[in-house]
Length: 208
Image 1 (tube, one colour):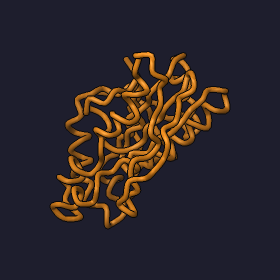
Image 2 (cartoon, one colour):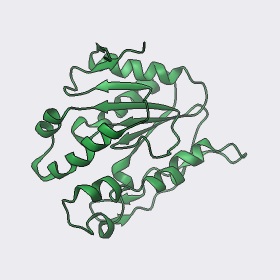
Image 3 (cartoon, one colour):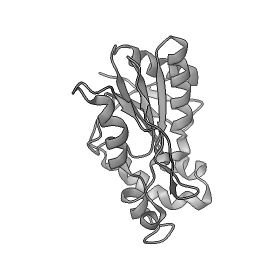
Image 4 (cartoon, helix red, strand yellow):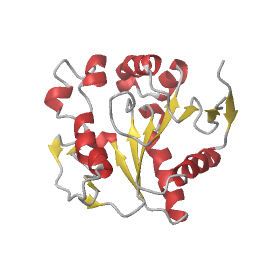
């Protein structure tokens, strides 16, 4: 049975940051977790920690890479299958962020910070950004793993069903079936598996 070690929130940020610093070159990091766990908030803290050590970092939020509403809501606004497969533009995330940062064809690596404003359901006009040497790109959002996206380091925030139900707003409860199925069926082993039922009391799986 897997064993977990308790961490403080600051300790978890430091752990992830130190794992990033083990790599000298450009690094693509997944902070994978349900909205109830607020993976963006954790990724933001890691980004700040890295910057304080002198390592350049940036953050991309999967919420800024949602598909158009016509696709998301084709089967209604509360369809769990749509949330699992037709909500986020994982293809664009790979094409516009991860792949260009991993390219080794002599082209300066760059990324697109945002693709779409989900509130207005319109594409956003932002310029691509050039990646400085040694950039740590943190990508935060749900269901990132097991999709053939190229990450160099993966962090998976896992929450049990009672915690998910308690921390998910009523209007978003329909997403839980997809999140729970994703967690149960995930075959990819993350580099860091974090029990995140209580974000102020995380626990990290010990590697045998």
